[in-house]
Image (cartoon, rainbow, N blue to C red; front, side, top):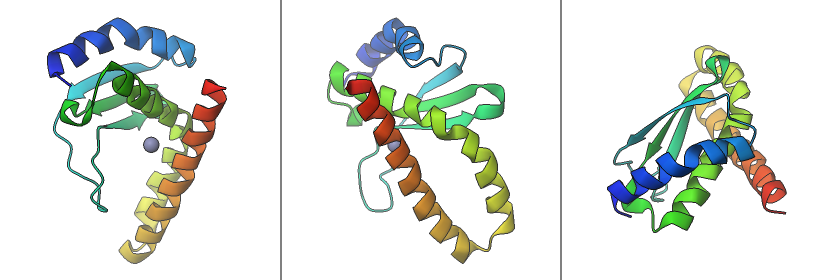
Length: 128
Ligand SMILES: [Zn+2]
């Protein structure tokens, strides 16, 4: 998707999307970047970096991996749902400091899967 079109769509719709998800108090910084594929080679269109203690987050969007406005909305909603899980980042930060790299790899896999399942459940609840 063309970056300028994506920027316009996000500007016009982000506040409504936040309000629909009861996240209107969150302050978002949105950056348009090129994201590297994940370790398993999957294309990454968007990611969120939350600061839950301040109700802030950075959302990075790679427009080259977005098809159209519907795809953009779906990805953006998905990343916003991650904010519901973000208070657990405070736990993760402690684990990150405590664990050895090999143990942290295991925690990262489990953490990622648990977080995606949480987001998926929230998406299903939203759609239904
Ligand atoms: Zn996700």
